[in-house]
Image 1 (cartoon, rainbow, N blue to C red):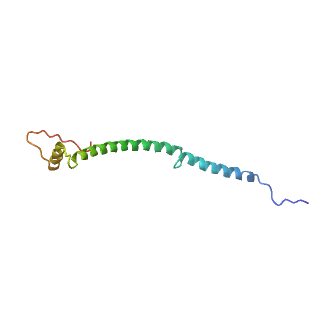
Image 2 (cartoon, one colour):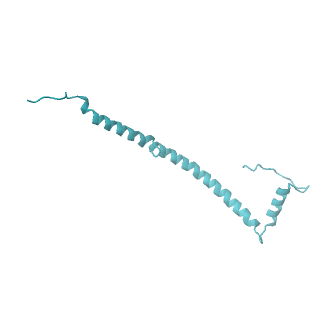
Image 3 (cartoon, helix red, strand yellow):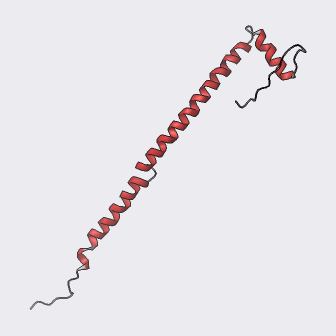
Length: 106
């Protein structure tokens, strides 16, 4: 004689699909919104464009400074450059000269 020890439950069949749906939802959310997800990729590209523009600006400033330093090296000092640097450092000019003050920030 067969006896049943437990009644069959209908919820037992839903446990595995429910856990699978939760796990897939978790990973699906992080594929889009995660640190290296699809949405973050667009933000990283925008940041790369901004940083590239800043890098180009700094490179231009560096080449300008390298040119000015090259003119001040020993043995090849450009007299105009030396005069300009001395006047700027001492804040002097001749009475017959016109002085134009520029902002150093740009």
